[in-house]
Amino acid sequence: MSLVKTASMIVLLTLVGRLLGFIRNIYVSDLYGTNMEADVYMLALTIPATLFLVIPGAINAVLIPTMRGILEKKEEGQARLLYHKMLTLILVSFTVLTALGIWLSPQIASWYGLTGIKAEMTAHQLQLMWPSVLFIGMMGLWASLVNAHEHYFTPTLGTVANGAVVILAMYALVPLWGLDGISIGTSLGYLAGALVILPTLRKLGYRHRLALNWRQDEHMRSMGERVIPILIGAVISQSTVFLERGFTTALGDGKVAALGYANQIAQLPMAIFVGAFTLPLFPLLSSYVKRGEMDLMKDTLQKGLAYLLVLLVPVTVGLILYGEPLIRLLFAREGGAFDETSVAWTQWGLAFYSLGLYFLAARDLLTRAFYALENTRTPVTIGVVGIAIYIATAYLTAPVLDHGGVALSMSVSALAQSLLLFLLLWRKTGRLVKPSFVMTLTKVLIASAVMAGAILALNPWLSGLQPIFHLLIGVSVAVALYGVSLIVLREELAKEMIGKFTKRFARSKQ
Image 1 (cartoon, rainbow, N blue to C red):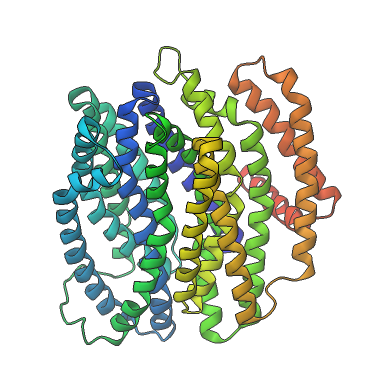
Image 2: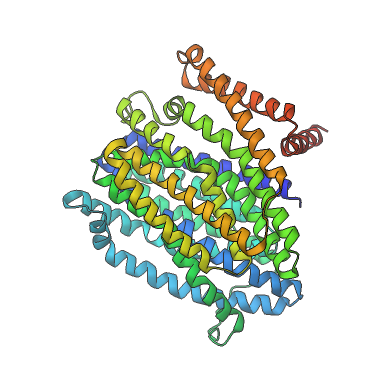
């Protein structure tokens, strides 16, 4: 399956999954807006949501290169034995982690700086969500194993199953148990996301057995050595989420929820495009490194970075200029708790989150390149630098920009980390990008400027329309102008993407 075809499939499934996630947050916003209950839910969700970003990625980063090496040698029996050992390790360790989390939930709530009823409510919701951690661990193992065989459908389908189960559980459980029903549904959603992968594992010939003799295994030892710095790096990179909660909690009730809604919108293009390109690219990068084909590895990395430029720069412009009608369309309902203050607070956070979209994507892709080189320490070091930059920026900007300064800190930190990773990888492997990359960047900026001018010119004419019509007309014109501008500027990637889409559409009509 080609990179673009695989990416298209992942984009589609991820989009459906994220839309289901929006429906969940629409439900929460209708019930609680930016009130204390919404803050409590967002605070409790931080741990499973963060571990969902950390754990599968860490397992993926160490298991895929190891499995690819085994599979390329046609050692299928060794691959199955390695799976049995990993299954045992993850079952035991994540069960213990879940139990500890339930026990320590009150202490964790206090770490957010919470007291009184808000702390008690957050601790209770945390206890209901902690089983998610075990399911996330299993999902990470099973998805990585399937990805090592270059199968991407069912792991991505897991996001759809997750969202669908959460929505069904909310409508079934919230009338009975209120906020508890949403938290229980969250855990059930992660369970569903894991179970969807099982048929593919069976089709590939894997059976679920326990193996306790993993301590003397060379592959397990190698993965253990590599996963520790990866986990440290992932925890460091995601610790900004917890810092964000701490900074924002101090700004008053409702700001945590506002940033939660804004971040979900900003994460949609991240999940779609970053997932679409890092998932299929990582096994390719690992294979090229294993075979010593470094020029192919660098060419593939450049193409991934260039694709992300073409896709994410216009998205950044669109989110900043169309933030208000988009937020109204998604969350504001007549009679709901999401009021004008909620709209304004969410829009303010979204504008600053949007500035960091490309840099977050580039950071993740460059980190995968280091993992393919089996260098896990450099991303950890850069992550520590990113934390320091985040804290400094938040302290400087939050007093002036309120919760917008907290969101801006995330973008500034991502910018610094991606630049440092790029320079260090260049130093290690030689020149990473060719002049064509700079040309792509220039053309994307020009096309985005044309698009932004059109949006600003149209907004006075469209602002009186309902949000859905405002967005449909404005986004259609903006996308068309952006695409035409890239074609006029003779951007090859744009022609390639449009050509592949046209061919697929033509085949679907036959």
